Length: 124
Image (cartoon, rainbow, N blue to C red; front, side, top):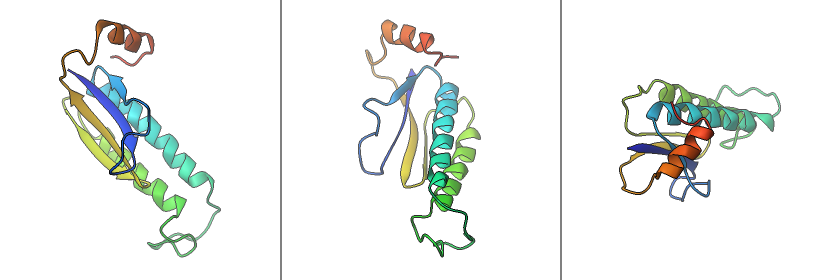
């Protein structure tokens, strides 16, 4: 068994050409959390400092980057709370769905894939 992790707009195919592949849930969890943190930082980067205590945001409405970043960071907390024995996870933030799924398909992960993952440091 191995794991695929990625992100997409809900209802659409994953944003990456191929979802990332990991040999353990913990590796998938940690890598996805890093990607999510970068997305949260990016969401905040375009928004000027403003009063954002209400939802919707009084300055930017539903498209407020600060609100999106907070939603992503909440999903990161939920993801990192998942133990290594988990098989799947889905979370939402910043208009994206983030996910990890287990894969049992024969032939999906070859020995060559395993070697490539090991070389990339994406194994335990």
